[in-house]
Length: 466
Image (cartoon, one colour):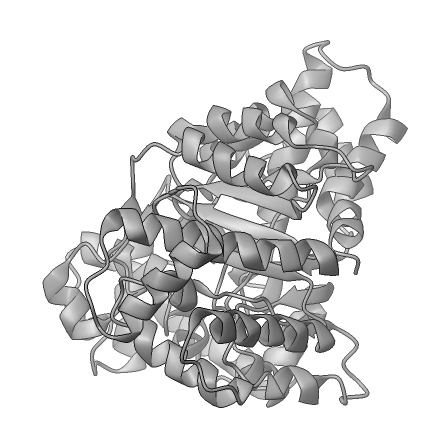
């Protein structure tokens, strides 16, 4: 029987052990997609206790706590931070098999030197020890980033954001981590949502343009892409909960936009045309600037209306959608590729049924002398587990080139999430190690070590021009 989460955790063979410890373990981190708050990074936020850094805003943990029967007041309400921590400890001890179980203990080990499992019984002493460390010295936001060997962070930012904290961070002399914005224009694409017109008004304010027609809207949109680029942005992000495509002209999109400005109803067919043209417009700008475009596909959001009305979005009530994606996605990518204006693109699926859909879609549009120009994104959200990440990488290996994979990201709001990169690296080293042990891959440690270093760090560094 192996010791619980020891130095060879998840490494089931000698090749995996060597690949991880000698090649992957100490590689730097590029966290090219996360939801950290740049203001908190700039201000070097300190955390009063482990609940604040662990449970505030973490809807993954909230979801598990609800499944364990924890009262909502002790999750998102005004219960004390200690009571919330204790409720998490009680939940964690029965969360075996869930990646949260491993993430939590990796974070306790790496940041606090705590190797004892967190349970209801051990919670009081772990609370005291973790809080003592948090409050003793260099455990503020930037300290946690530097301790994790992070070289670059790409936050997720609305086009109307001022990016003031990204700009200010460039002036800090003793913090050499790149904190770069990511262009996330969903509110300008989702024409049928209540957020659309208020967002257009904000775009009008920050761009200095009176947006009374579609042409000016596109000009304002482009000005924000250029502004983000000037601050260091090199990647966009789009949530395609439903993938749609409809051939559309600029004139048609303009008529649909004009209807929306008047508050008139937009049909689904009109919505598809507007989305297709507008997303294609910004994608062509990304191509011109050398950006990468991320497409996150397949979330079914805000399923619980009562709790959405109470808590809002991103509070733990989302799940996997099962819609069809292949044809619409292919037509969209092809529409850009026909003009040779398809940017580097990362395709993520929340539904593992589409692993082979995306895995085969990549090969249709590779080229341009860019290794892995079209990427199959890492196991995302509900797939951010041993099985999910392994399935994603096996699909990529079966259908494309695993060695060109840009690897892991945290997709997190927590400064303690960086051990997820270690988790991923252990999984990829073990997968390759199994192939070696089974005689499926030659025992060429130097070559394989270089491949895992590429996947761990170098591929992302080159792909995002960092």
